[in-house]
Image (tube, helix red, strand yellow):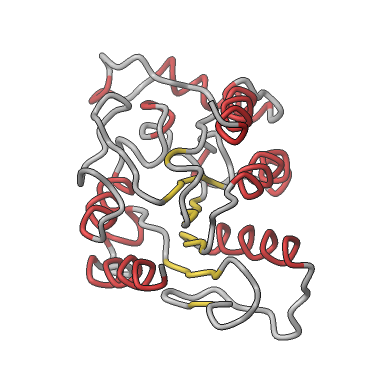
Length: 231
């Protein structure tokens, strides 16, 4: 095992065993007890969710937090919920995954040249982690960012992910842009600068965005086509 993979394994173990945020611990464990009728036979994961994919990959995909009956149930990022049902087919079409669906940790899914992480590792009530809870999770993301030595780009899903990614990029490059980049779907920053990695933004593939038409399949497909071209 390489040093990078050893460090990642140690990090993931810390993530899984984390109990820093009492509100999130209580919520995620309550979901395990109550479950959802459709998943009554499932043995819910009910712990913080580690990152997923190729730590030696070139692109980091950053989301917000696990879904109560998605990742909190399956134990894998964007697996078992509507967001994943929208994300993985788009990634598959762009050549970043081995298959278009993500149902469970045993479904054979493999990611190609990408690593998926989140700002917050526990399912939060109403999908809204607090600033303090995100700050508690931040060291995990910092370490993943450092471990991704081949990273050339970040795709941020949603404004909170964008803010976190931008902060990490500024810190890594020792910069403080005068004209601060602003979030918006399909925005690309730092692609022509000496700053690395570049930052590409997208609306989050949440049910709220996809069912209202704020984020369409065409819009999302263009994000991943752009990411592929940038490689």
